[in-house]
Image (cartoon, rainbow, N blue to C red; front, side, top):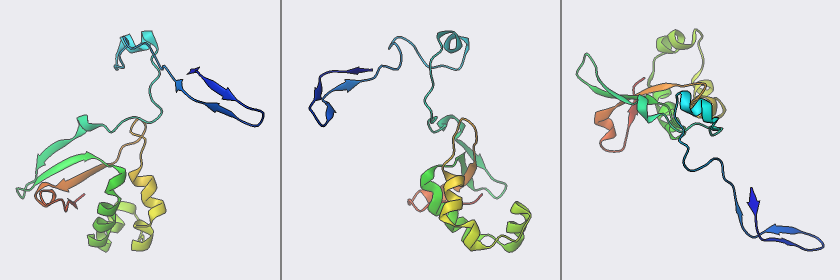
Amino acid sequence: IEINPLLATHDSVIALDARVILHDSNMMDVDDEVSKQTQIIRPAIRPYPAQYEQHWLSKKGRVLLIRAIMPEDEPLVVDFHKRISEESVYTRWMSNMQYDERASHSRLIRVCHVDYDRDIALVALDEESCAGKNCKLVA
């Protein structure tokens, strides 16, 4: 960490400029033995894993996009919970969880804001509905 200049008065300290170097710019963050040998520190929150996005054709001929859930998917999850049946709720959660509980913001924060390094939740989006920016979550 480099802080220069630092302005200090009798009642406060202000950093006018600062820079933090995480590692040498010649190093690369890769998942192999090289990164283990150079001991690069990874960010605390891993970036969105775009490499897992995949298009899939259902038996009914619908094109689905299967990808990791994102924080901005919360409204889609709420809409999904409005549309599923009581039987589907019981099959998924092995209890008769009420809509208000399933769609509560406090619960969906835990579902939609995941640490991609430790957990991952997948969603399936109907590609046809996403063309008009009104994506529909189907699973």
